[in-house]
Image 1 (tube, rainbow, N blue to C red):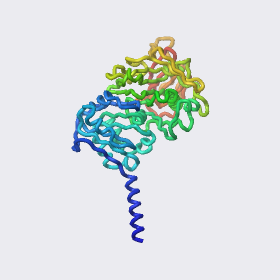
Image 2 (cartoon, rainbow, N blue to C red; image 1 turned 90 degrees about the vertical axis):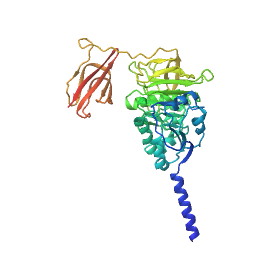
Image 3 (tube, one colour; image 1 turned 30 degrees about the horizontal axis):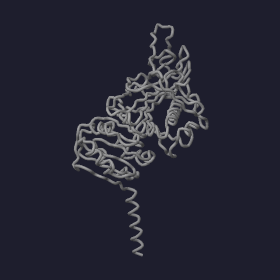
Image 4 (cartoon, rainbow, N blue to C red; image 1 turned 90 degrees about the horizontal axis):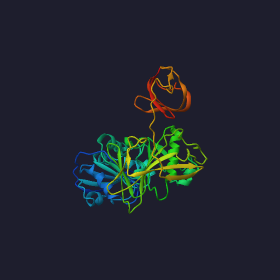
Length: 428
């Protein structure tokens, strides 16, 4: 009987250890250091790491302690980051974090918060969402991003979870044809604003391995879904396998890669600003149509080079300071994706009509308790609070109901063809 109890106790302890354990692989100096870090974000397409992009990433750590996190695998990054690249760092530690319990382990939490840079390895992004979201890993990463301001990077799944929105792969991967055939199909699983909070990736969804297989159609579907569900335009950043998008603290993205050995690109994707610009058909059990005269999505494609010659300013998507690439148009008709090269650049320059112009749009009454009227039909209306957060969006309206808004001061963006203005109103 004692032997049986001993066996049961051993098995129970072994199971408990398996549920709470993490694995650490350590290279370098075990003494924790504190260095001056620079927030920067490195997004990599998923094949072999680009050395120049990784050097750029490490330089932001100030020579501190680098932590690699993953759910499976071992120490493949340690020597590469510690010595191969020639950028001096104090240490490299790989933490394999395969459970929620491991993600909440005090050691994991401490080592992440002590890091001067974190790299998220490739894997299955649903593992990362399942095991790390709403845990100490999640809070530590957001602390590093927004408070300590250290470099954060990732490849493949490690890139796929970086945006405000992300494809979670909760039901498995999805191909472009399947996503395009039904934007609300069971495989099209999207998370939004509940994991990592990189401010520069607000309203951005990323994708990787873009050329193998062709994932342009599925990311177009993700963007259509987000637009349809939130009435707000989202943006996309994507990488072919041998490219990396390196974003500095000012929001300037440079594209590294192996061109011309690898004819790979990074893509900066956004809905056209010519109204109307929402998907024509984005509904359950129906093929996606987002055509808008063959210009639904305006895309800037940049080939990755060893010096990061091409760039895109993420601070102003609609009138970007972009160089080293070319514009494309993407569109979808009845579930069939198409792209045209040699397109014109996106141009969202609008005219602020002066108050004495016959085209001026006026709103009344102001203040108001419930209904806000306009003296002309307005194609797109966005109501924002004083922090700039969109509270409501309307299309093709001469009046809107705002009785659900809390009392206070709001700003309203009015947009029609060749017209754009921002006005203030008070909700009583």
